[in-house]
Length: 237
Image 1 (cartoon, rainbow, N blue to C red):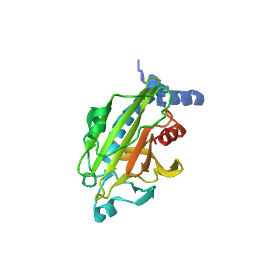
Image 2: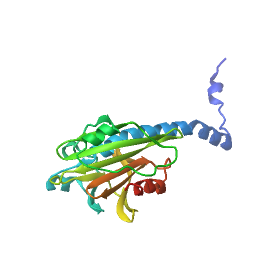
Image 3: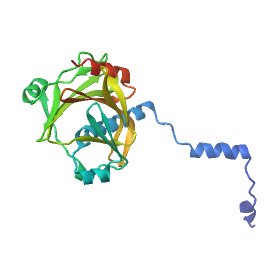
Image 4: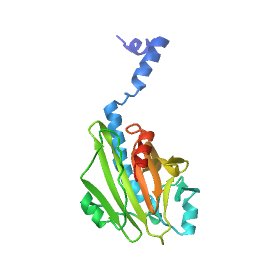
């Protein structure tokens, strides 16, 4: 007995059945809230290092012209906007060391102030980070909250006068805001070493100058509102 009729006897499924089946097999599972948080935390921990420790650069006019699309000056700060991932020839990398806050204050060659207000539930960690070379010195402090998976970071830095520094950022990532009625910059995103693109738009960095010290306040948008980030910045005397 021939079984050819088994392969030949094929009816086309109903349209509605076919549509639902296609949707079911092609639909990707929605990531859970925990997964999204974990991804953001991984992005944050990577981006903090890349944005604050690597994106400061000094380059000759020829190199800068090849890298930079536009330069924005906000409150005495230069932001070099580009669509191209930073190359090592344009960057300076500083490696931080950990100290107690008391030890760090004795080591720093400049003075800075701590905020008088922080969002509820955030507590300052005992260890801070300090890095320095002939051109730049910075201190970086971390506040954490048991209720929020994302931390708050404050970096205070001072650049030597003879060095022409700027911050290399993605095109269109900087907006001008106000801190104590003075110009400040709010940077959205960071360089992503895996995609080699300006990415991670939920990362926010509030940057402003006070006398000869530059301050950064950085976190994940949504864990701390921009209004509270500004309030914390304005509480620094």
